[in-house]
Image 1 (cartoon, rainbow, N blue to C red):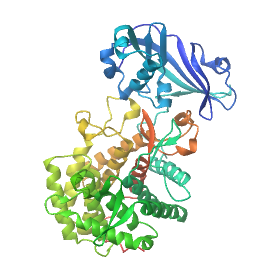
Image 2 (cartoon, rainbow, N blue to C red):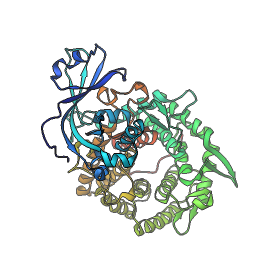
Image 3 (tube, rainbow, N blue to C red):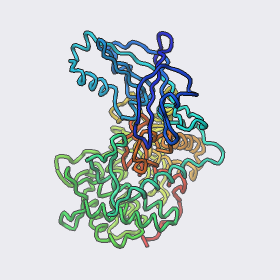
Image 4 (cartoon, rainbow, N blue to C red):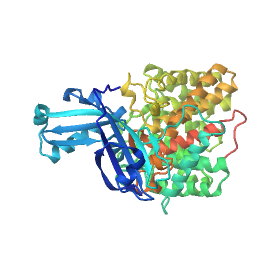
Length: 522
């Protein structure tokens, strides 16, 4: 962490906000919090974002990326100076704008027409920590101390606290509230700008359909089940195509992916109105079957052919999970359990040749389903092997407290950055691994998996927009409440982050049962 080089800076950042919008903002001489709301002219109904700088440290430009790294955004502020031109960016100011340190420096240079070379020769940088507070405009109310623009979720839940249920409650409310009249959900939303991203991804959209369908079943809620059907109907109308030969696929501008077909088929399989989509389900099943491969288990793209093989770690598991669940439901044209087992073995071999954590959660769920139907220990043993390996990537000690519980291996950046969607997906698999460990009497593993699940829930709840201390800078609060930020220092909202977290919460609340095969969809 940074070491400060002297006395406090004596400056305080304030931003008076009403409904998330700034009314007044700036830097002022430090003073007591007791009269700060009066000094800045805050009124009842306002919130005042406050950062009290407590030390500044010079930063050489060649150490910029080392000091101003993503992990400290929202904790560390930055001062940029060039001659008499000085800009100081508080930690919460950068968070509220969802602005990286690099971008803040670029904007300063652009606004003053300063070249990078000139700044390198004559400019200066300083970093500082700051205590963060949220003050209500009404004087009789107490201020809240924040950590990185939020309040901390404790390492362990309190008595009576059910984090899986609370997580699911918030996500389901966000989904229902943001479901359009046509049944669509926003794929990606930028809270700081108040706009949706033009990006798109069909797999992630169908994950929302699947999660809502499962939640409707879990709660016996006709309203949630109907919302799930509307969303599924919207997604199928947008993406499903007959590609010939009795095959259906989910077609996007970038091609047709095995994973998209598998997740869409899973969403139909679990829909309360699955008969409405029986034709699409049959064609998707035929399409998925056509991509089975004798060497690696599954090919990954219907088209374009040159992309085949991409995202194998994800798509092979999604396909195998659909196969397993189709067999469990007794679906027409579902592959036999023997064919599922053969595909599993091919995937197992390829994974062990080049391990990747993205492989683990989907194949864990597929193996749990196959174990429930066959009782073959090979499926359970592989779940334990892969999830034991995955546990080494969950972070806990030695990092800021709001990051605890996420999954990230800084020694293997090629595995991808930390992300709410990744944590949610890993928890889906770990929930099934935990259920398997319990049913097979692996108590030590069950203890380790349960700890990992609880820590992951802590991380997801930290990322969830929960109240004023998370969304004080957001004007369109209905667009974010209950959703999950991508990271504690990146407030962008994506539908798969919510869907994976909801699917994990459902599995934690109602673990997979290892009994008789279930009946066909009804």
